[in-house]
Image 1 (tube, one colour):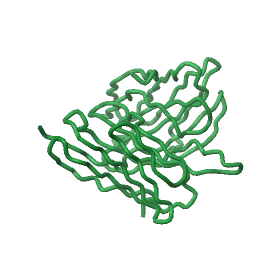
Image 2 (cartoon, each protein chain N blue to C red):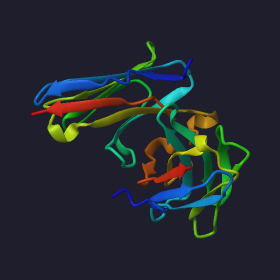
Image 3 (cartoon, each protein chain N blue to C red):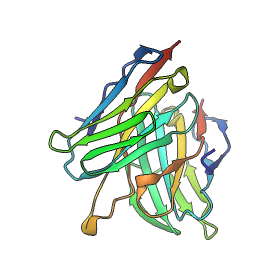
Length: 113
Length: 116
């Protein structure tokens, strides 16, 4: 158990809908990262937050947004969902803003139908 | 061309074999190198990380980094069926002052099966 908690574990939704994925980092970790894993693209970095502020952004679609709250948990919001958004979404956390020792949660499997 | 290339395998070896997993990369700014293990339907688990060139050993695992060739390796000695998983290499770049950027760039992963 990495100490990073993601909910829900599975999510099935229809195209055009909006969903929110939640992540609780390891105790004491200030940095949260979101990654998307699909069969054809592998693990792709989406966005990083450090102590409530956005630190780095990857190839995150405009339909996606995230935030980190004062208690350090984070949410990833996906809207206007398309079939191609079906993937595993992972949250990771680290004690510093550096991703060198990032610990991953178990992921949320999103299926868009 | 992807920044990090990793042979997806699959790789199948008998129990007790030495396994060699490799990645190549093109971004000279990468200074931190990591290996993750991912079991089916689970999150990636950090195995090892190294900074810059050199070797690092942890039990049956040895990580090597050759920055001149932009090539990293993970060796698994005395492989066990429980080592069967997907192995992902990951890298991060370094900015001013030597601090790492948080973003990890992953290889595609190599599927390893160790059969009894």
